[in-house]
Image (tube, rainbow, N blue to C red; front, side):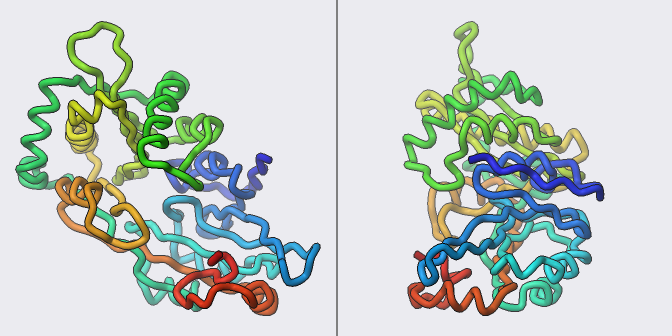
Length: 319
């Protein structure tokens, strides 16, 4: 079932993860609710009670993968104004959030902890200094094999992107919210601020892309969103050519920061993805996992049979 987006009269940010269009792209996973003060978005979902059959509650979460908003100073009022029909709320914050850990704890007194370090590239520094020598060697190798082209036409990209992403799903066994549907991608490719970079093997005419990266531009920040490749793209190390050309393009556009995301998994474990992102980064910034109980009685009831894992929030979703 596809849930509708609740529109409010107050304007919302129009770019990237903060946009209404991005929230709408996740409507298969919940009903989008705009926070009117800070202009961020939450997804409301149903929580079925095993303790009281037939009883249904709801909770809310920030949009995957990051909660972004326009005015972080208004977030606390928005969270405190949420109705008690929502049992709890949880978000993973934008690493560029214009707030402090103390302000976040005021909004989310039940849980507020550093979740992951996100890799950041300061584009005011020359890329030759910012990017590791190992990565630059791979860039030179890849650019001999592929050409990179830029596109912002979501309609043109959809079919090709879905084929590439199907290969990624099969290769890595992607499940859950990150296993986006075609409908979700149709919305994501129309989000304001989208910039796509496509890699094509040199030589063959009319060859389809062997790799693609999706980014969202929001002000002076570029957020890396997703990437997918064919087997040939992996062989040609197209990821290096794509990232290099993307960062050069953003530099030319006057963008100051590129947010590359964190490593895979729920902790900052060493992995190939972590090493890849670290090679492009000049530093890291933390993203915080934050949670607040809005209806304590319902929360306790729902959590009665939850696994005893104090680190999981909300407890009733630990299973």
